[in-house]
Each structure stands twice: as C-alpha cells, then as structure tokens.
Amino acid sequence: MSVAVRFAPSPTGLLHVGNVRLALVNWLFARKAGGNFLLRLDDTDEERSKPEYAEGIERDLTWLGLTWDRFARESDRYGRYDEVAAALKASGRLYPCYETPEELNLKRASLVSQGRPPIYDRAALRLGDADRARLEAEGRKPHWRFKLEHTPVEWTDLVRGPVHFEGSALSDPVLIREDGRPLYTLTSVVDDADLAITHVIRGEDHVANTAVQIQIFEAVGGAVPVFAHLPLLTDATGQGLSKRLGSLSVASLREEEGIEPMALASLLAKLGTSDAIEPRLTLDELVAEFDIAKVSRATPKFDPEELLRLNARILHLLPFERVAGELAALGLDDADAAFWEAVRPNLSRVAEARDWWAVTHAPVAPAADDPAFLAEAAALLPEEPWDLSTWGTWTGAVKAKTGRKGKDLFLPLRRALTGRDHGPELKNLLPLIGRTRAQKRLAGETA
Image 1 (cartoon, helix red, strand yellow):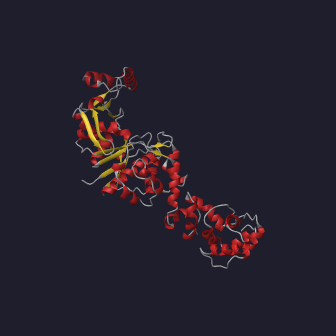
Image 2 (spheres, one colour):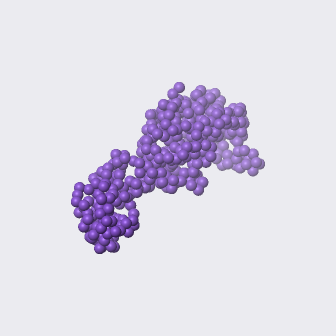
Image 3 (spheres, one colour):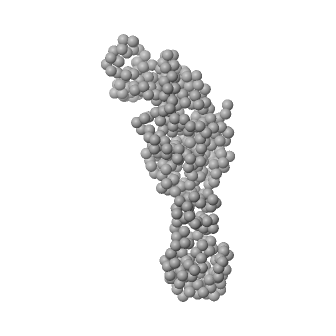
C-alpha cells in the first residue's frame, strides 16, 4: 500500500513553528517514500474555527513549499460521522451518559483526592430505560462515550519504540457531545480510516489518544495506521509553544521577521534529530536526508536566534533569481544580480538590502573627515567603465601616491563613499556607485 500521511490542523489560531514542524516531517516522510500528503482541516470546533485561520494555514504551507496532494475538511463530513456513530450505538460500543459537567468534575476530584486515576466509573451503563427516560424528561441530553475493551493496547511507535497501555487504565472517551456534534477522537479515526492514512505522525501529547483510538479503529473496521509521536518543541527557555504566541507564528516569522522559507525548513527538519543543522536551499535536499529513525525522544528547543543565523547563511548562498521577487516587493525594481551578489554577504534579512540600495543608488552624506587625502584619491579615480578590478587598481594607485596602507588607506575611502564604517566589499560596491557619484562623495558632497 502506498504511504499516505496527513497534517490535520484545527483552524482555531495561527500556525506556530511546532505545528509546522509536524507538517514538514509528515511531508518529508511522504515524499521520501513516494507517497501522498493530505491536508485536512479539523474544523468541527465551530465556535473557534475561523475562515481566516483556515486561509492562513494554506498560505503558510504554500509559502514553505509544502504542497498537498489531497484536501479534506471535517465540516464537510458530518453525515459520515453520524453513520459511524449509529453503527457504534447499535453494537453497544457507544453508550449515552447524562452526567452534567459539574457532576463529572466532582467525580474526578473525588478520585484524585483518593489518589486514584480519574477514570469514568461507567455509571451510565447501569441506568435502565426508566432511568434514562426520567433524565431526559428533566431536559438532560446525553453525551456518548465509547466503551473500551479492558485488554492491553500495544503498538510499535516509529519514534518511541514499543508502547503498552492497559485498557482498564483508560477512561471511556466522550465521542459525541450533548448537542450531537462529534469530537476529535472519533472524527480523526473515521477520516484516517476512510482516507486510507497509513502513517499518523503527530506530537507526543497524543500518545494516550492513540491507545484509545486504536480500539476505535478496530471497532469501525478501519486499518490501524503506523504511529509516530514526536517530542513537542519548546521555546529557548523550555516553555511550550502555543497558537496564541504570535511571536513564533509562521506568519510573524515571514511578514515581520523576514525569514526565508528554507531557513525555517532547514531548522525544523533537523531539530531533535542526530543531523547537524545546515542551510539547505531546496526541499529536495531535505527529502534526500530525511529519516524518521534519526528523531530523538529528547525535547528539542526552538531558538529564534539560531533561526536568524541560519537565515543569514541561506541568504549568502541564494542566487539572484530566488530573491528577485522579494527585492521587487521592497521597491528595488532595478536591482540586478550584480547588486545582489555585492550585498548578500552582509545581510541577515532580504529587507536589509534597501539600506545598501540607498548607498549605491541614492544620495549619501559622506563622512569626509580627511579632505586632503580624499582629494588626492579623487584625482586618481580611473575612467569608466568600472568592474570588479577597479577598486584594486585605484587603491593601488592611491597607496603608491600617498604611502598609506591598511586601515589608514581603506577606512577614509569607505566612510566617504558609503557613509559607513563597515559593509560589503568595496570592490563590489564601487561599480554600482559609479564614477560621478564617487567623485562627488570624495569631495564631501551629498550624492
């Protein structure tokens, strides 16, 4: 059977780096195996699910290059969930419960105070027809629980290895709410079974869910997928990530921090693995290197500073064709390969190219703090056309005429030509500045 995986986010907030790491690992796993990748929106939480979040999920994945082969939306499948629920009720695996949230909380608190696990006591199974009729006459509507078999549940996890749960240590999960809407524990299984998902790769916070869902797979007659549970990312301080942490949302990293998609992908693909984190320019490179067996059970930390350093390293490698659109979006429509190659070694974000565009194409107030020396240097400027050899030819002549060398030679020229003490190599900038502008700046004029 062909490998089929899914990324199933809830459109209830912005995707953060932890969510996207799971999407990326699923996508890499599928592409390495020649399988397919399903994007499924788990949107049955109608109060919190928003169209703008659904659109944001698709925008974020597209920006990263994580194209999907299939698409599904849970809210389109209510009829199917009703069918499955009806079958489970008929078989006795789904039973009605009438406790209020307050009553359930009291039961849990009582068990915890006794040092016992808060497992549902199955009191609803002891109700007779008359009891249920009386409760419904009082206006109570049932929620529906799945009756677990009290037998061992075992699977071999691709990350955690052999996993074992005792069925008797698990609480019968609620699958249908009082208002009739199905919950994730049911809908996820039905979707995975119907859509022939072969591998479920998700966070380790779902391990207990998996023990329950394996029994639901068996009850609905679906093939049980292979599971892999990845340790959850934390931030640099060890705190968990959240959709509400906008600073680590993919949208924020893209739009406010100016992070390149391959910088984020290069980092997230390697966090928590035995591989070194190195800049990669294409997803194909990450696919070739991917092996889920390299994922460690240790908790990986996401450090924004590490991402920024990786972003700079990637920019230093990117050809002009890969950034031309970004430069145009910054208003640098006339930027060309020569400009990009001149400035990219000094960038950590593409947006910083605007500063160097201003240096090479807009008026600059020079730091002409050694006018006599600069006048001598100006007199030795070669005629155009200029190329990458012009800087060496010119400074060689200035050195021979003035006897200056090293910092005493180069720093006054840099400050006069760019108004800065540091920056890209002047052999690359000088042809972009041009002779007329250079001559005026050396004379102390804003040009």
